[in-house]
Image (cartoon, rainbow, N blue to C red):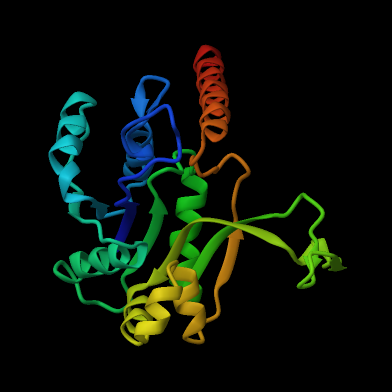
Length: 244
């Protein structure tokens, strides 16, 4: 089976102008998380989409489903944990109640990355099936510095080998389950992301081509950029429809 997963367990916001968690902030008339869910639902290969959300927001999310007419037949909600790794664990536990096949695929995405494309999601499924683990990345565009302990530049890494990590992270369930189950208590305190978890346990992580539009919305500046991206997507869609 193929599972999508959305991590939306956070309850805080770095955006001073908003009192609700950032995944529920309005983006051009629709909450960010709804944009993300619609992108995931558009990929028919996902048999279930597991959403980890804080229990205080279960009813809030249900109301959003009704407001925006989201078909919930493939959606399962689970409790988000105190830390990100706890939410990941709860997603895994939710999936294991449905299937325990180690070759099942899980595509783990951030609730606040609403511009993930079908191409990225489908590439994630295909690559995880073939290689066992993968993550979306884009080449670093800024000059990168490595500093010494006094704050001076020590050396310049080769930018050709540097990439920015995005989401989703995708895995065969057997790899992810075995990796997270073998974490020590100290590792659980310092390792949070699924790529870190599996890499720490010796698994090679294949990369797939991400997209510079696939941004994570965490600040007011990100929100302004996201509004521009969405308006551009809407205009492109209108142009395509007008040509049909």
